[in-house]
Structure formats: structure tokens, C-alpha cells
Length: 283
Image (cartoon, rainbow, N blue to C red):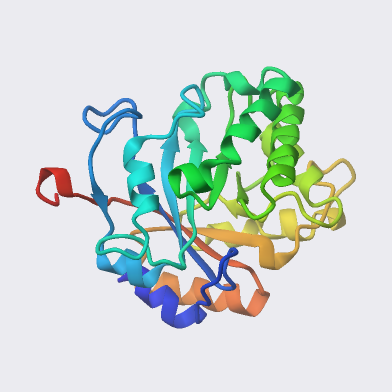
């Protein structure tokens, strides 16, 4: 219901790129702490009708950076089945999300050196043909890699090499509300320093009520903030996604959608949603 309400308000446009009026939903697929749903578990996920008809971007969570370049079989299955029953529409980008809070607590091995980062980029560049992915979501948070300037620089090298090898492969960068994670800040500052941009969008990971909107200025108008502010570039508003909870009330959705449209923000990202497990009777 939330997704359909968003869609009617924003007037979503579907394209091969991140759509104008993005409504992205994070769908939980893999978690190495949950039996039967780990990075190696084989099962058949299906989307609910509201996800298929209401969203125009599907983020699949989470890839364990330690397991890359391997991809959870269930992620690949859902990305590859576009246009079929229970699957994303043929025009909906499916983006694999790597990291998240738990997987950021340990170092990401392929960020140890620039060579390792670029080698991983060469692997990820094949994910569209190999696994059906349209992009990667780099959810690196506080931890050994996220707090390391050297590894942050290597993440930038990864993104640059990936864009060089597969220019159509989407790269999205979640960020905290106030900029406080070294890797996220480094990525934003590098990606939006000049055109062509190295990242397609940033997503503000604040999901309570309308609170993500208060942080838009920290990225969209960063150069107008105080001297020494962590973000040193202005991210174009159409490339900023506001975060909102999947359980948000309709009144909150209406208020936020109105603000997104009036401020010219790129759209929403919704945290989070479950999917149907067809292997176990669609539960």
C-alpha cells in the first residue's frame, strides 16, 4: 500500500537508469545469521504485488563483502526473472546491496589495496550478464573499512574502475544523516566533484518520520555549511533519495512526498520489506 501511494503521488517514470521520481524498496534476501537464508542458501524469492507495481527500483540486501564476488543464489534468481510472475518488471532496475551495519563491523577484504579493489570491480562489472543485476549499492558503515581513509580511497578506486568497465552499471551510495563515516564522505566528495558523476545517487539512511529531510542540505548545500564541513561538494538534489520507514503512516507519506516534489529531490528509498519464499509455500 505504501509503495502504491508513493507511486501515485510522485508520478513515477520507468527507464533503464535510476528513474525520475525514484521509489526504491530494500528487500531482505540474504543474512548469514539466519538459517536457510544465508549467502549460499538456495531458495526462490517472489515479490508481492505492491512491490512489483509500486516500486521502480528494487534493492536486494545484503551481500557479504567477504563472500564477494560470489552472489547469493536467491538474489540472482530474483534479478534474472524480470518480467515473470512474482518478479520485478522488465523495466525495474535491480540493485544488489553490499554491506549494511553488521557486515561493516569487519574489514572488507577487497578494500585492503587499490589493486584488490580494482580486481573486484572487474568481477562486479560482469554481474549484469552473469546475475541479472543492474547496479551495486555500497552500504559501507562504521567499522574497520568504513573508518579507514586508505580503504575509503580504495572504495573510490573500485567505483571508478567499475564505471570505466561497465558505464551503464548503476552505483548508489547510502549515507548517514549527518556525514560521519569516512568511506561515505570520501565517496561523495570524489563522485560529485565534477561530471560525469561517479555515483548515480546517494540515499539518506534516516527512516523515522520526516527526519531524513532535515539532512538533505548537508549534501545538497554542503558548500554553504561551515568551514571544515565533511562534505565539500554539492550533490544535485535530483540525485538525493530521502529515507522512510516501510511502516510509515499515510499522513507521513503524503507530507514527505509533497516535500520531495517541492524541493526537487530525486525520490525515496524505503527500509525495509520482506519477500515471499516460494520454496516454503510462499511465506
